[in-house]
Length: 500
Image (cartoon, rainbow, N blue to C red; front, top):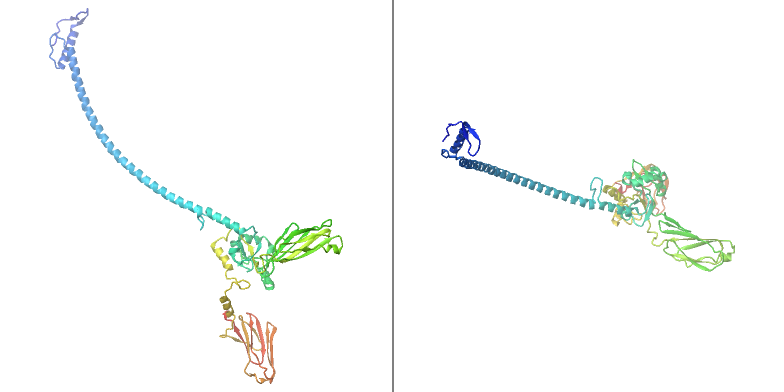
């Protein structure tokens, strides 16, 4: 219950202090309100404030706890919901990321595999491709190795333009060289064989005109010079006579020397000094190159003894294919020169026949087409003795020269006739010539000139028994002029079958 305000002052027990009645009443009323708030019944003069405070504290804590728990439950629900959403989102994103990674990984694996396959193929090409460049103008290691090997084989230590002699007429047996006995013409020689072309262009002494070249062929059957630029970049090779002796190689070693020729003919000689005193030492001289058989050896003594009996005692003996022996017996003075000649060993006359011109030392011709042109230049070329021509081809060639009687031309008496092709001039006497009584009309003849030169003159006389007019034929070339004078019979021209 509320304390009434009856006094102005209230003493605080066991103290000397006092409070005003109004303050006291206010404090007492606040205490009672707190007791009531705690749910207790206020009692007069009984102080219940501590219990009320305790009760209020417990009530307030429970309420706050309830609030907190309710808020906590609410927050847990929110967190759980958010976590579930986040988890779903994470799982979805993770699945997407895994799929993306797997897709990227598959693409990368495929790319690596493709790239690896390409790299493997490229590596193989760089290592062993020989049918063309690997990249632009770059070739494989194997191609360069093959070219280097071919270059080494082709060069053979020879110089561009050098003339070499071979026992073979085949290009495969003479790498790096072109035939020197056929007079080949290459319209694009500058492109095909640039080294040889530039070599010839740099040496005017090796060049002649086309007219000079043809004149040499007409007069000598050969021409050792080149013709360049009949058309721009063209090259005509020399034509050497393979069946004539040509110097193949000459070498001087110390006091000795030798000269080997294209048909195997071998000459060699040397010098050795005579002793200053008389001696009888036997000395064997060895030839630089061996002969097929013992050669002829000549001595030339250059002595100052001037005693023929002594000097003539110095001579060679025991001559073999490999050398000879001599003794320094009597000669004194300037020394002795010797000279030997004969056919070389392993090179009989029929063996060394084909001249080849070293034309390229850097490899084979520049392309398949050029190689085909080079090969074509040799194909179909007959050897000088026609040994590489089949008998059937020889027979066919002879058939082409046969007289074609399906067509002819009749010559007019005392009139020049120019043969339109290779063919045959045939004189056919008329039937007024009788084998029994001879010509019945007095003197008769058939007089033939070929290019102004008399070649045939037949005469017949009337009444001479057995003197008959005989027919004859002879071969003429295209463009040759025939002039016939005759009184008996007819003169015809029949072309060759091959002239069609």
